Image (cartoon, rainbow, N blue to C red; front, side):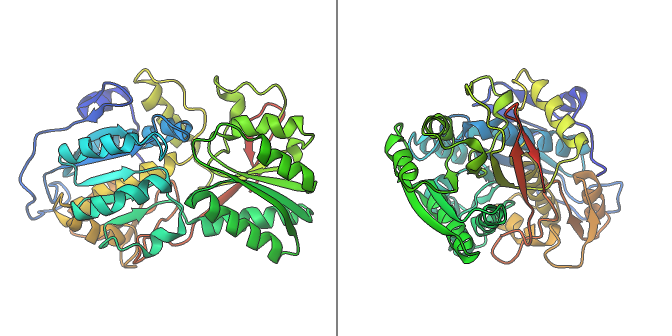
Length: 423
């Protein structure tokens, strides 16, 4: 892909001020008129300042996803602003927390008060369900890099909701088939009792049993729970061939309990909410190896150049190294697509941007392929139609704001507690 480098000089040029993880503002020039006709590729089709918000997990049970997603958003903003192609992004970043901590309530008020017309987030489907109707009422476009709940497909969102991650229907099917293909006949499942957990559980179960297996035990827990002994005992009593753990960072507590119960990691199957490089995480010190455990998460294999640019951007601002890149590509692409739709619409209003999202993602089928904001913006500024293919895949939004087609990767842990992609 021919994308611009996220260098330190580029960030200074773009007017970036990353003051803290909870107050990251990436600002360009001041607000400008909404747009003027293009006179060719040398002159942008518009001169817009887009007030963009991000609502991502800096705290809470999904906080391990904060660095990759925030680095994806920040890198995309810096590269959009560096391109100087007609859109300058003014980014305000806030913490979503989770449904237990409710940090999102204050954050949404802050974002709406800042005048944002588009928001990247939330990461958790449960949080998005609580804020989406309010954003729709306010005319704010919402695009999530990691919402996987199937119910968003049919949500009454007035065309203002999009996501760059696929539905849990696909991940559950892939994981259920993986467990069956590994030769397991019986399965136990520990899952989080919310829309994310129950949705994945249902799809894992239906797929696994459709392949001839049997779910012999299942045990749920509530968000905010800290004790999981009863759930592990339920699974142990059924003595399944394999165990699926559908959780967020509660896995850090559940894993040692499973190990102590004699259920070894080579029988474990994880999901995107807990699949992480634990061997590189300073706050996770398992006293045993996860070798043999497997899992799934959405997204294709990332190109080295992209991950290098993410690291350069993120650590260059004084943040700790990114341990994994889960949903970084989806977050990056979300920003690029919103910026391109804004440019194509000649507007920063949420509804106007939303009306162009399918077009710039290739959903109308008549665009010219491009793989960076700069190249796509040139097509638009020349009077053409851009079809952006990003790091998370071709995207191509359908009429429901869902990506058409997606990649679900399968991964396996080595002795160092790091994951390697196997498919």
